[in-house]
Image (cartoon, rainbow, N blue to C red; front, side, top):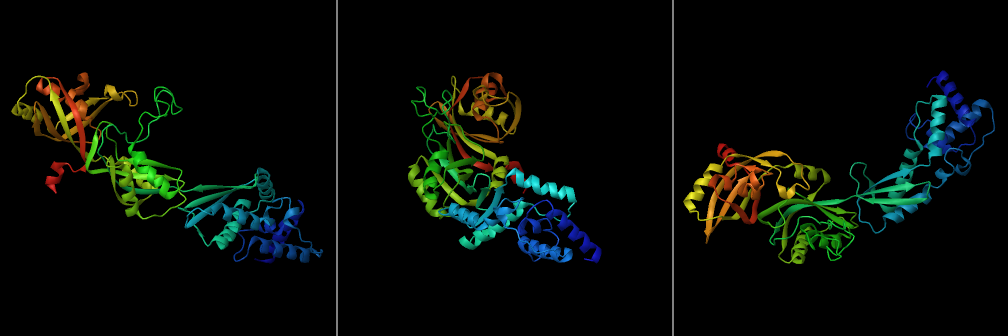
Length: 421
């Protein structure tokens, strides 16, 4: 820095001191990006001494309590560090991130000085507060920062004098099997009372007493001391369908867990014990939020086994001929009547990859189907009053309906593509 630059710097310091009493932290922060290896308090003290020497004035220090910018907050760093450390007590975490809500007057005051004096190297009050308190918290707790993926985010609400803790969710992945019909994938509030409790739901607030989400989530909530559990599935089966075979891929999001790391083998055993054969899981590992979007966007083919009833007498050979006419065919499906209350009414095109007769039970037939994601299997059989075409009922010329449906596999390769590999 040459003599002219030094003179300009002292003029800026002189102007800042002219606004009113200001502590070393806040004075140094106005030049926070001008040099390295100094705290703002050290920088401010050096500038105050240099100003006194250059102007031949007596040195006068200013305490944070008298500072017109921070209003004393820079003198309370240790106090806030203790509050933050106390708020983290009892929460399992390896990393944390610190933020703050700053009183508007502080931001307005420092921005006014920046603008008035065209300062080119200032640092915001919030940045220094977060950094300096964070260093003290780290020294107290022995836990380090993580600005990208912290286990816990702590917000200092300076205006209210309180600390807010946001525990980052924990995610783990696996596959679930559902062996009992009549269980939805996720919790359903009663449609009448919306969860409040009424005669329709016997005052439970639920459409169904259990769900896959809750059967898996309950023991995990207890084990991780979490506030809740949210199941993200790779699609969903109907309530009256079973999920068999290798299971449906899922990611479980644990909300505000106080215990973040537990043995997944033990957790798997506990889930399966508590679910009592209604639902079972095979856990594959820890996951993260970004994996949820990948899971949801996966359009894997699915394999089903259905038991079908057909009006009148049909021989197995006649049925096989009808199924052959559906194999490899693109099906045009208008949104089924049964889901119109929650889906847009439009026509979707989905392909039947494979369809075969798998067995006969009295006058009913087991049929295996491999279809593109989003293919409505019940409507593929019944035709849904002409909303699905072609359908088994249309091809065979008789009424047909699904009696039971099981999902056997999620993530089936297209057999034609597989043959080319």
